[in-house]
Each structure stands twice: as structure tokens, then as C-alpha cells.
Image (cartoon, rainbow, N blue to C red):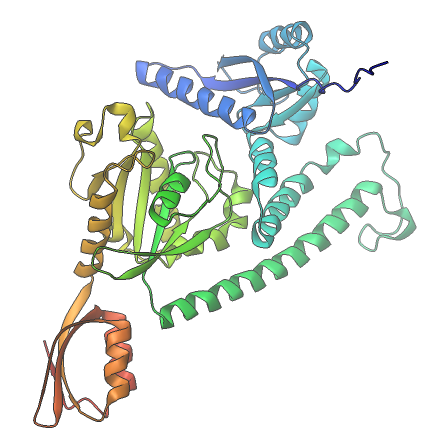
Length: 439
């Protein structure tokens, strides 16, 4: 007698996404709110929650207890019960008290924007570095919310409050353990940064210029990376598909090689815990010779996304992570032109290239633009070297672009194009061999 399988797929977790918004006074504010809500829905869906309710709630005033107004909380509680919602995502930063009060009022789990992004990062991080970064960010966030986990415990009196021991409360013990773990994580991440620095120094000795892809999350960076390198980096139409930097070497039309680096996507109001925790990832951008700012030009909020990315890069400059010349090293890549009818239909200014990473349209122009930027940052120098200085010539062929060579009078007269940093290295290493030099 045939048997029937009794296995069933567990029901999906039903969620609501709520955007608290100050009262708009212009059409632009309404469009901005709608775009922000759409982004929050995408974030929520990316971790497997099924969004069955979404709403923009206008705030007359931010209530200290719940952020939302009393009437808004009551209406939301009825909707949660009616639609059997298990999780309510509040697309704003909630204090621990506000989160606790909303959970009591709504009768379900409540997470804020920071908690949501941390959940996504935890699901996406794949490498050792990414895992450490996410854990550090999560612990920093959790430490400020321990009080809501232990409100059922009475405070015990014991000692003087700084030695711990038998009188230590559970919350104090947990805070101590979290603090110890944070210290260890920071040490491990510092080692990761030192290792990354050694890798960068090794690349400089090769050397290949580094081209870093940056942009708003889901702009198509990983799809472009795969299109240019032939790699199979995880690329999906979802937010934060890439969290760990991936690097590959590619060859430009000039036959020069560069290292292409795919990085984590930017997002508006990125939690402060994540900005600090992902500093090592952003260092790849800081070291880049060229920054490709990949934009989803078909997105209705593309201009605001561009502003968010430039704001983060500006913060990196103010923190000393980026030099003041970074805008001159940037090329805007206007991606998803196929959604607008093709690259010819995309209006763009100088220093921007319209492409479609999906169809491949515009990729040759992008490669040529990278080549041109690298050429602009290079210097052309002429040297005269003794014929027996084969090591110096080999160095020039390996690290530069030899434009002209003439062997006469027991000398090699060579014209080479390379980066200013390589020029300084060459002239320092082979100073004795250089008989004369000039532009």
C-alpha cells in the first residue's frame, strides 16, 4: 500500500513594514517616503519574511515611549492581529525602551532598521572577515539592548558594583561577557586589517592598479564584476547580495592588467555600528587607483542614492581614510540602461559611462574609460641606462609601459610610461644606473 508523505513546508513568517515619516510638505517628500518604504520592503523580503502589510505613518511628534502616536499603535495592533503578523519592522532607529513598549503593545516581535540590516548582514557574510565584522556590529547593538532582555530580574545588591562576584546581576554578567568578546573581536579584526595591508603591499610590488566598484546596494555591482571578469560572484536582484570584497585581475584594451574589487553596497542611514565594523572593507576603496561608482540609473530614486554614496565617501575623506583627490579618480557607471531603452537613451555628463551589465552594452566604452583614466595618471620619462643593466630594464618592462627603446653608444635609451609612485621607486632602486633622465 503506497505511503503518503506527511512532510509540509513550514508557513512563511508574515511581516509588516512601517515607515515613520515626518509630515511632508512637498511632492518630493512624498516620493522620497515611497522610495524609502519600497527599499525597506526589499530589505525585509531579502531575509525570507513575507510582507503582508506596509504603510507610511506620518508623525506629528516623535513620542518617547513608542515613537508612533497612540492612535497609530492601536490601529497597527488591530492589523497585526487580523493579518496574523509575527514581525513588525519599523524602518527607523528605535531606542531599547521604544522597542520593548511596541512589542508589548502589538503582541509580536518588533525590529528596527538597524536590527534588520544586521540580520541581513549576518545571513550574507561568507568570509572570516565578514563574519567577524557582523558579529562585532551585532554585539555593539545588542549591548545597548540588554536591559530589555532582563527586565524580569530584580537588581541584586552585592559588592561595590565594580568587582562583580556573587552579587553580580545577570545583565551585568552578560554585559561583561559581551564586552570581553568585543575586545577579542577588535583584536582579530585588527589582524585582518594588517593582513589586508600586507596583501595590498604585495599587489603594489606586482604592481597592478586597483579598480574598486562602489555604489548603492542592488545597483548591479556584482553583475558588472561578473561581466568584466567572467567570475561567478553571487549576484541576485536583492539588497546586500555582496558583503565580502572579491578581487579578480582583468586585462584592459591597452593590455594593461588591473585588479577589480567588488565591495559591499552603500545604503542610506547605515547603522553607526556597521560603519565602524566595516572599516576594513572600505579600506579597499581607499586604496583604489580608480573608483567606479555604479548607479542603477533606472531607479526612480537614483539621484538620492548617488547623494548617499557620495556622502559616505565624503565621510571617509573627513575621517582620513580617503585623500581629497578621490573625486578625480571616480568614473560614474550608469547601469541598467537596458531598462530605459538602451545606452543611447541615457543622458549623462562627462566622466560617466552608460552600460547594461546584463546585456553587455557599453562595456567596451567602460573599459576604454578605465584605460584613459589610468593613462592620465601616468608620467612619461626618458632614461639612459648602461647596456649591462638588464635588471633595470626588466623592472621597467614589468612595471611600466615601454614606449620607445634605442640601443646605441653602449647605452639603452628608453622612454617609459608608468605611475608617479613607480617612477619614484625605480629612481630610488636604480639611482646608480641612471645616467640621465628627463621628460
